[in-house]
Every structure is written in C-alpha cells, then in structure tokens.
Image 1 (cartoon, rainbow, N blue to C red):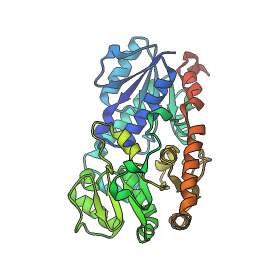
Image 2 (image 1 turned 90 degrees about the vertical axis):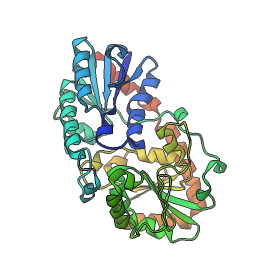
Image 3 (image 1 turned 30 degrees about the vertical axis):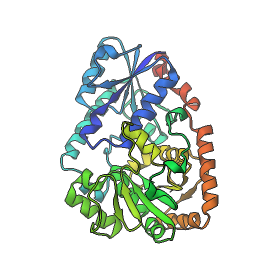
Length: 380
C-alpha cells in the first residue's frame, strides 16, 4: 500500500542537527519507504500538503506545530495517520542526568512543546509504530494500538567495507577503541566508560576515541571547558581551536575524522566509524536511555568494529559477536581483554559485520511495515 513518510525537522529546535537525528530519519522513514517500493518521503514544513502520496501518512519523530497542522489537514482529506515514535517523549527528550546542565537554557521549553505536540499526534493516530518493547509499553497508555517494528537497515546505503588507505593519517597504525555518540548520550555514556578509555589511552599503540560533536560548539565555550574537565581531567592547553579535531593526550574528541565534502552528515558519520576496532556502547540506567534500540551495535558492526556494550534491555536483541558488561569496571576488563587479543578482536569485528548483514536488514521487518500500513491494522 502506497504511503508517504513525513519527516519532522522540529528536532532542530531542541538541539543541533546530529548524526543521531539524521539516523532516525534513515532508520524509520527513508529505509522502509525505499523497501516498500511504492512509498515516498516528504519533509514537514518544506513540502506542501499535495506531496502526500497514497492513503496513509507515516509521521516520523513528530513534535512541531507544523506537524499538528499537517496531520489535521491530512485527516480532513481522508488520509490515515500512522505516527512513528522512536523515543520516550513522555518522561523527557533527554535523559535525567546532572549533566543536562550543559544543555542550552532554551532547550527545556522547546522540549516541553515537543512533548505536548507528540502526545497530541499520538492521540490522533490510527496506529503508533515504535522500535522497542519498552516504547510499546509507554505508548500503549495513549494510543489505540501500538506496534513494534525493530530498527533495520539497508546495506546498500551504508559505506562499503573501508580500505585502510582511506582513513585519516592520525588514525593509522594503531588499535582504536572508542565511543560514538552525540548530545547528552555522549556525556553520560563517556562517563560510564571513562576509566576504560583512560586505561586504553595509556597503552602503547592504542588510541582512545570519543567521536561526536565538539562540546564547546554544542554547549558554549565555558560549559564545554567544564565538560572536558569532568570527562578527561584535562584543561584545553595545547588543544586546537577547530571543530574538526580537539586533542587530549591520545584521546580525541572529533566530529569529523575525515572530511567528505558534499556528502550527507549521516554518510560522513558512518564512514568515519571505519577506523574503529572496538566500539563502546554504554547505556545509562535512566528510563529514557532504557527505551533505546540496538541500532548503535548495528552501526559498529557495519564498520567491523567489535562491540562492547551495556548488558541492558535495549541491546537484548543483539545476538552477534560482542561482550556485554554490567558496570564501568566491566568495560575496563573487556577493553583490557580486547587490547590483549587485537587480532582476534579484528576478526570478531568482521564476523559482527557479517551477522548484521544477515540478521539486521530491512528484509526482516518490511512485512511489519506493510501490516502497519494496512487500514485493518487499527482493528487488530
């Protein structure tokens, strides 16, 4: 059944554009629309009402006033509404954390408006689709029917297996262990694996990498300096004042390891995971973080990076190579093992990619999207 996936760009009002936000559009709109074959993708606030194609509109990560107006106009035209919600917007867009003090002062008001609109849209929808069972439980209180459709990817849209010759020079000749994250997830996550990264950065031939936006650009210069001190016990003496790379010992916080001019942000992000040998995926114990999916492990696996991750419900779906740990000390021990078994870890990283290509593709979930788009779905 033909449908239009409407992407809401209102997240630009609650935080800077990031690979994570671009990834939401890819996982929850672009990939399923392409796999369905007869569906389209449109952007709320940019594309007109007549961009709607088919009898069903799937509204992805919606929360803007424009999304409310569009949904009501579509309903008035007889279009069926499906809302796809990939986060916990009931208890807060951001995790509950003392480190949310680094978020811009205007963000809480924008986030509250986003939550109100999200709830209103969920109540207008015939059916709500979510990516995890925990999100299903939360949304069931507000929707007539909620359906779990796990995140899945289309391999053709990901960078190919990378040739080391394409990696940036600063990443050559070492064993790279790092965390790729943005926003408060990066702050909380980096705190969980702080000791593991500190130990890794002290080992010969090992580079610890924190891959994400420059916190001084995200939170302001003074807040960013405090964030560096909190995470790395370092001042910024000797650090380059650039968005591309900020160095601290062997640890690097960088937004773009490799400049790929003219390529989308998400493509650059995925390409730059290529130098990782080990990808760390910590999850906080706050309720919002517990609603996340296993997509981070798929991202690492597609880069042939061996995942070391929190033993938590969001990652229960992952059954590929990796090490699940239950504490910061567990991350330290797993990282130590990885450094001591580098050749084995690189081979396991290749096996993780093979697992993702076999088990995590859209072909495994497209039947669920088709079911959700059927008018009878709301009656099931």
